[in-house]
Length: 295
Figure 1 (tube, rainbow, N blue to C red):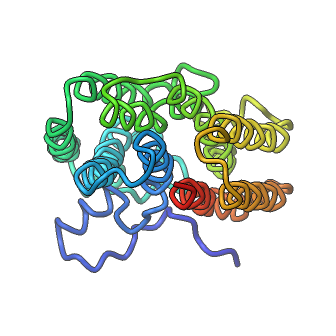
Figure 2 (figure 1 turned 60 degrees about the horizontal axis):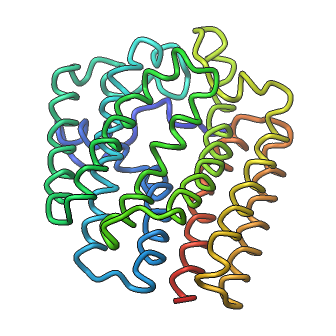
Figure 3 (figure 1 turned 30 degrees about the vertical axis):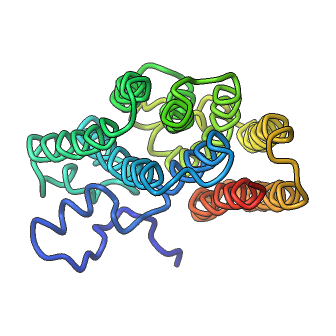
């Protein structure tokens, strides 16, 4: 018998209500915030030309965790009526009634305010861009109802730490930042389509829009092309700023991981697609390591 995905309530060591809030923000599943963290830190290193200092490193690391956690709160509230019909999500705290909508939203607002407090320690340009980042985070849960490729909206939202990192270091957002954002958007399309393939049968029944449904039988090919676009754009953007054997090796290692992920999902099996999605943060870490070591 195949092991479960995440439809059962996770076993949290924290008791009572604290355990529910930890489940709400997926505390036991760090892959989600790591997928945001590695491209953000890569951008921070590129913008700084090396180590950005402990202050900005702390701001963007904690800010990433807080905003991803706040996004989980909003997402679970927005999707609570859909999630109960999806095997993977039926056990989430808001969906099963263990946490109220009000409690989840208040907790999400608190997390977002803490993230904004961190942004206030940077500069005016970063503060202004943070409002756009918040708007995107709030828009994504509802995009799944109206946009045939909501992963594109998620791609922009999950990539917005990149221009904010440049803004925090340089007080501006240069073309380099937007190139990295564009490339990262393709990476998000790749791994979140893998994620959507896990739920495709359930999403078809409830009328949810996802890239896995829109792409149909071209889903695996589209994921391969998205990986190629991601690595090509990042390679082109970074080649002039951090050219080194270490950077080249990182891109080769990342490309091999991407090919492995495509191999895993070739039969579109739920477990294999979920495994490929969860492993993507290692691909992001590989490129971050290449960037950091190159400087």
